[in-house]
Length: 80
Image (cartoon, one colour):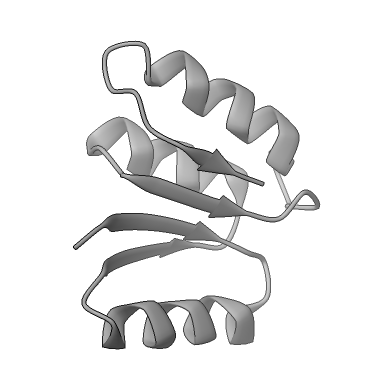
């Protein structure tokens, strides 16, 4: 199944995404802010990114822009 990076500053939303998607066979990595998400995306490739716009340290729009720069050699969808 898909490798998913889920970013939300709400712990309950991160847990809900991790549990729901994990139960359906996906490998979910969660992050609580944009900077942590970017570090995790630099360390490994994700097939899908789910992010909210309002994030601490690095907002969702800037995060997606930075992730797209990384995806030059690793194309994949980004959802914001």
